Amino acid sequence: MSMGFIVGPLVVFMIFVAPLWLILHYRSKKHASEGLSGEDQQKLQELVARAEQMQERIVTLERILDAEVPQWRSKL
Image (cartoon, rainbow, N blue to C red; front, side):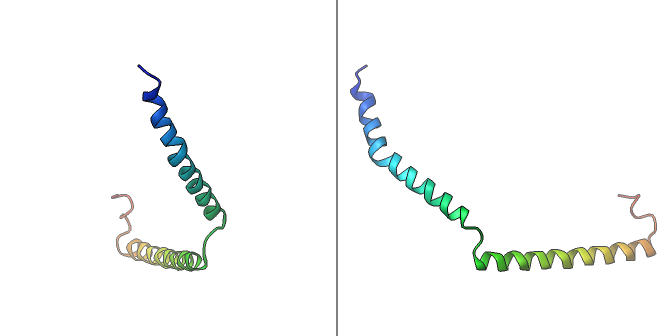
């Protein structure tokens, strides 16, 4: 085997792939360190509100089931 077989792809990697890889890596690190955008924070707050509403509904449904079918929990 000759060294040219390894050197060619290695040069291509070092000239094109490695710099692009580093640029994209550090750009994603910078973006991640900036935190959530205003729009993302608003969506998160909406999801939290929906989750709280769902929790209230579940509690209400469990109360209804407890009143109407007292042994429902043991049937699960």
